[in-house]
Length: 101
Image (cartoon, rainbow, N blue to C red):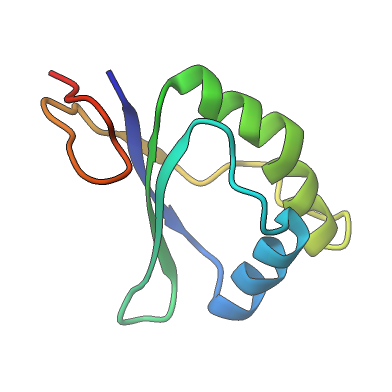
């Protein structure tokens, strides 16, 4: 079963681009899909799909949080954006080799 969630992220594209640069181009082990969508007000919205919740947690611990810390100049906000876990009943596509039912 895949692990998927959405997040409303109170940052703008410029800061997002700095975070992405800090993370680097290497794909995350277990990361299947990351969409960053701009809302009408300019804030961002993420949709993420992972092979497992463990793979997601490992990516945050090892690469994402350190990159966010650097992008914020060491002053990252203390609270994470609210994560809305998705109740996935099926997942298919080029990045997913098996159906998750």
